[in-house]
Length: 58
Image 1 (cartoon, helix red, strand yellow):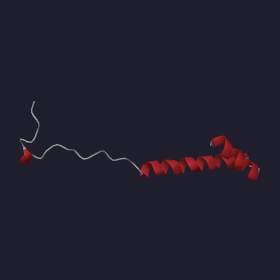
Image 2 (cartoon, helix red, strand yellow; image 1 turned 180 degrees about the vertical axis):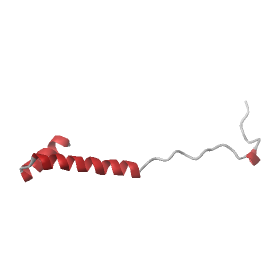
Image 3 (cartoon, one colour; image 1 turned 60 degrees about the vertical axis):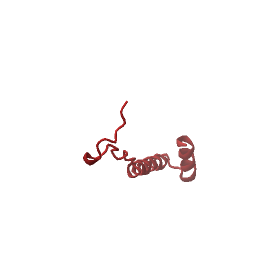
Image 4 (cartoon, one colour; image 1 turned 90 degrees about the vertical axis):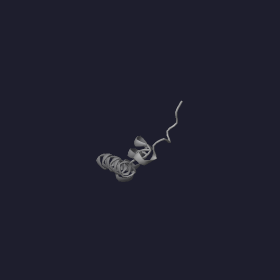
């Protein structure tokens, strides 16, 4: 994806620096998306203090 998009922007604008800035902008957007879509760990599934005796015994 990187070399292809750099070539596309460079051919369209004639500017290599703008092509690199475009790649950097996509990386920033990808970072923001990754931070927003953070996976939260599941809630703790241990029984409450009032629910003793529900644990399985061997």
